[in-house]
Length: 382
Image 1 (cartoon, helix red, strand yellow):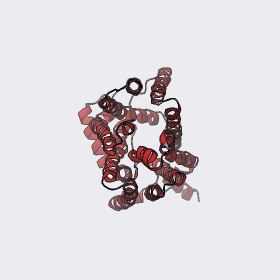
Image 2 (cartoon, rainbow, N blue to C red; image 1 turned 90 degrees about the vertical axis):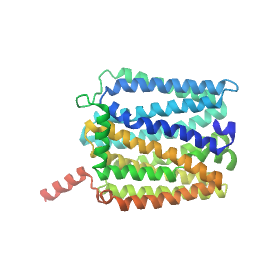
Image 3 (cartoon, rainbow, N blue to C red; image 1 turned 120 degrees about the vertical axis):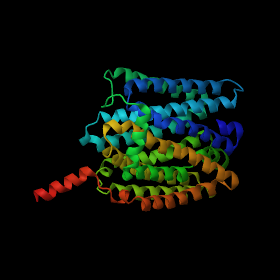
Image 4 (cartoon, helix red, strand yellow; image 1 turned 180 degrees about the horizontal axis):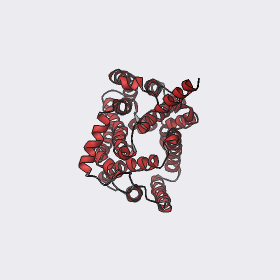
C-alpha cells in the first residue's frame, strides 16, 4: 500500500524502521511476561489487539485520502503486539509437548508456519488484485478473531512451571542464559546474519510493480514462493530432526539460502519472473531446513522455565533481522539498483554465515543429545 502511494523505496525502509523500534523495545520484556503470566490469557489479549490493528488497516484502505502516517502508527502497534505474542505462543506450544516428542513438534510447527506462509501471501495477492485491499485487511482481522475462539475453547491455563519472578531480573537471567550457552547464541547469530543480508522482502513491491510488472497477484507469488519451497521441504522435516550433527546442517543450509538469493537477484536482471520464483522456492526450502535444525537445537537446550525469555531473544533476532535487512536492501537499492542490492546481499549472507561458524565452534561441534543417547545405547547393546 505504501509503495503504491509513494513509489519510494525509502518509504518502505521507514516502515521497517518503525517496526524495528517496537521490536527492539518490547521483545525482551515480552519474554519475561511469557514466563511469569498465564500464557493463554496473554495470548487472548494479544490476538484481540492484532484483530483491532487489522480493522484499523481496513479503515485506512477504504477511507479516501486517509493519512499515510496512520499506516505507520498501526504498523508500530502491530509490530509491538507481535513482539509480545510470539514468545508467549512458542513457549505455550513447547511447554505442553513431552520432551521425547520435541523434535516432532518442531517439525510440525515449522510445517504449519510454512503452510500459512504459502496461503497468506497468495490469498492476499489474489484478494487485493480482485476485490481490493480493504477486503484483505478485513479477512486478516477475522482470522485473529478465529484464534481468539480457539483460545477460549482451551479451558486449561498454560502457566510457566515456576513461581512468579521479578521481571527485570528475569530479563537479565534470560540474557545470561543465552550468553552462557554459545550453541544457543550461535543459532541466533547465524539467523540474524542471514536475515539482515539475505532476505530482501522490502524490495518485492518494487520488483512486482516496476521490474517484472506483475502487479498485486505477482507480489503475492513473490511473497509466497519461499513458503512454497519451504512447504515442499517440510515434508522431509521429520528426517531433518534425526540428523546427528545439526550444527553443521544449519551452517550448510544457510549458505545455500544465500546462494539461492544471489541467483534470485541475477534473475531480476534478466526480467525472468518464473526463474525468480524458482530461486525463491529453493531459498525457502533451504530456510525451512535450517529453521527446523535451529529450533531443535534451541528447544533441546532450554528448560521450560526459561523458554519464554529464550524465545523472546530468539524472536528478537528473527524479527529484527528482516527489518534491518529491509533498511539495508532499500538503502543499497536507492543508491544502485534493485538487482545489485539483492545479489550483494546474498553474497554477504554466505560470507557472514561462514564468519559466524568460525566464531562459534560449539555450533560446528553440536550433537543432538537425543541422537547421542541413541548412539550410546546402540553401542552398549552391541
